[in-house]
Image (cartoon, rainbow, N blue to C red; front, side):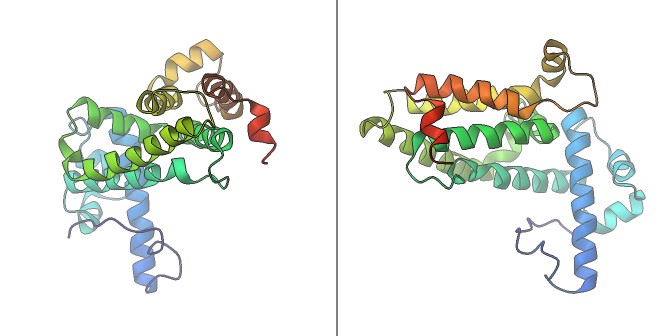
Length: 226
């Protein structure tokens, strides 16, 4: 039995039979366990037994739902890419650079702080050459390309200062993902103990001010639309 990417609609409680709902719930449990374990130890450093233990099931039960850890890993990558792909366009403020940049940074930083293992897992995949991302590059580059085009359009329309749209987007990724990829360093510098939450709002405010200043915008430009 192989895993298939499950759409948000298919994961709703009303989707399918009771048996199907139970299967989806168990698959989500296994997927979350995989994100934690692979995000911490990498794919090669994570055994099927470790995944089963993390999900609270036996190895035999694991294989009832999942053919192999490699199949599960590819499904997890599908899930992460789907989570991130439309985040830049999730703001309710159409064609408002200050609000969209602010909303994006706030969402991206909160996601990194609350789900650091997802960012770390994706970074580990990139570090090993993106071997299992081959089928996704079109979607990844397409989504980024739309964001880059939007930023460039704002510059051309005089809605923000001239920036390099590609680097502007990449730098937002770098800043927001730092708090997951370098969490232990961030905790040490911020004086936040292990197990205590990082202050996503504090981090977001500083990042938003930084990028809005580069864009020649201000917090008031964003807040007046809230």
